[in-house]
Length: 182
Image: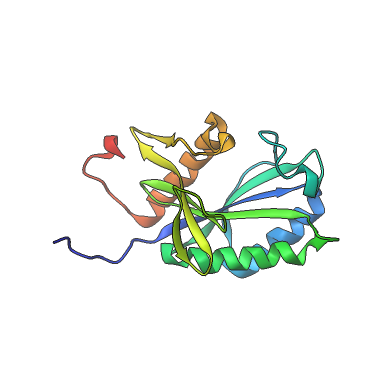
């Protein structure tokens, strides 16, 4: 029988896809009010791996990744997804979102995203929210899985997540006996 233990806190991250910088500023303000201070904010990156959101949001989309200072229990992910959906709705105009917010978390072992869409590899959590295991950390790097979105599998974005993971490890005071395997 396995020993049941409470989960360790994780690092809350978000991807924000947007077109107008002023929308990003409003969204960031709302997210800071809801989740606290950010401790990592990327430069504004082009969102050009897919045109999935172009019909709704237009072309020339941009993206910014952020993480938050306060660690969270991983079981908070459904509540966080609900709150980010509310922020998206706040900035919806004529049925089109002005921002797409994808929350998730980084732990020592993985990157998990929250989604409302079911699929074979996604695990139902609660309140219509699924966990999408997006990347795993092995041999000192984040590794994609067969279903990982191409942008999340790119070297540049994996490097961003490695930097956030390092912040998380320092912050959580985690130590591993064999860090080469993680």
